[in-house]
Length: 395
Image (cartoon, rainbow, N blue to C red; front, side):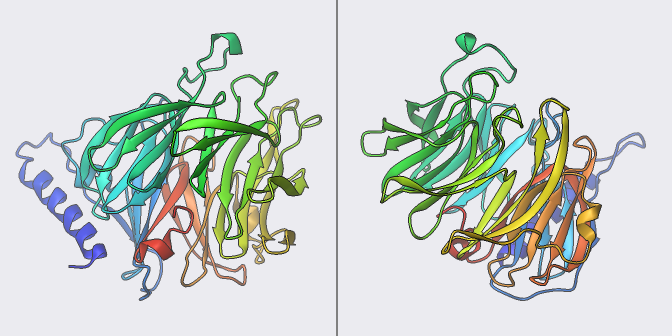
């Protein structure tokens, strides 16, 4: 049974159990929410998971799956596969990655990392980590960033310093912690060092501006690198260059930017100012970004972007990869991924942030191939197939 069939098998078994267990008229019976959206595609990539964040405090984090071999999209499969898990996935799904035979969902406001079988999504265990954010892996260990403090705006003197938790991927136990800056977000691992993007985002008057560097061998912070205020995402290309996003602060004085930092030359080698990035995906030498700018003074979003940067030349090669005018459909572009085989571009739209979002698929010509409704705030992709190839964002 191939990986896609195993996912369908678990969904079918879950539904059968719910049907057989419902013996009263007042029982509610849930069935798979499945819709056909495209023609079947037969490549080494069989499908992908999409983790929907769900609005904060709504407990609506959910997991969807798209099957390329049938062209069908299944919504909210976690509860069907795992009917015995209380409260389903929890509050705000912040990251989704695979390592070996396990899949890891970071559920921010539920203060846990949910570990599942990969690729069946069968629940294994929850690991408690307060205000956890993002996850990466290296030589048998998972590394998870944590804000540590409460999810609210407070003065820095009342905040806890953030940390990176080290988890044994076999025993699923937290074995160590390393303190970093305030409100650390994404992280990347390069040459046995962990680079952590500190945001300080709880206090706009005292934003963090640095990357923390952790030596893996000693698991201690060895350096802080000045980059820009309110750092968020970080990806490393094949040349050892980190692509780091800054949310900025007050738009007029600290606009968002994208910075390229060479880990070997140990210096910033490129900078794109007034460049809002909410999410990005690295595919070979092409960095795909989506985002929009937040105007703190006006308290509103403005200026959507769908861009491509050539990381080999460090130049912007396309300021809108959508060519058919359907960028006008978007309310809030939120997540992006690229199929490593077909090179189709997948872009999510968070819409109102409190209602189901949209997923739209584009060819390399920028023309939309299909679209489908998702859960609330669709965000994080994980391809199923040849894992090393399919999930370039997480080596």
